[in-house]
Image (cartoon, rainbow, N blue to C red; front, top):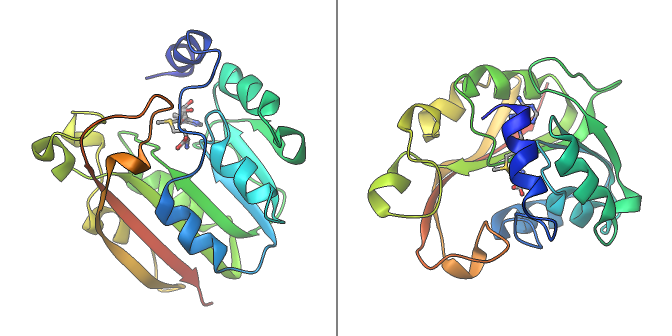
Length: 200
Ligand SMILES: C[S@@+](CC[C@H](N)C(=O)[O-])C[C@H]1O[C@@H](n2cnc3c(N)ncnc32)[C@H](O)[C@@H]1O
């Protein structure tokens, strides 16, 4: 989907598209980190960026959908985040940050996109990437059905170089209680999780 198609999807859902809170595993991992500077890549209507800002992070939320960013800015806590209209293929932060998080950004060139994100992580900082795993198709979980844009642990691992220590890179199952959509969904879903720390 291009930016215009995403704009259309957000325009059709003035109450927001995605769940009110970040994925549970993103909450668990980031809650254990000392708050600093953060970027939420492809922030959508801003659930993860606003959650982080509410926990003391100085957070920037980036998305190429202006409609998404309008919803994000209007959400509770939205005024605590810096919202930036940008494409992950081109945008760059002014300086590396302590945490880069990306949830459910699915692109034909995901490996290259995640490799770009690694450049935004400061030494000692963390990278957290979560997305639909290719196994989610067979599992029948909510999410895209095009395997060429879905993740695997190998795909995410291949985006890293030896500056990063991989703390977790694995398939995880998300229950319906941890739904991606604002309105929820019934079935469990299979995600890929990458949690890596920049050590050099
Ligand atoms: C499935 S939504 C996930 C939103 C949010 N991360 C969340 O989990 O609630 C994917 C988001 O990626 C954004 N996106 C897709 N391609 C992008 C690109 N090339 N640059 C920036 N944002 C992009 C879309 O506008 C959309 O908001």
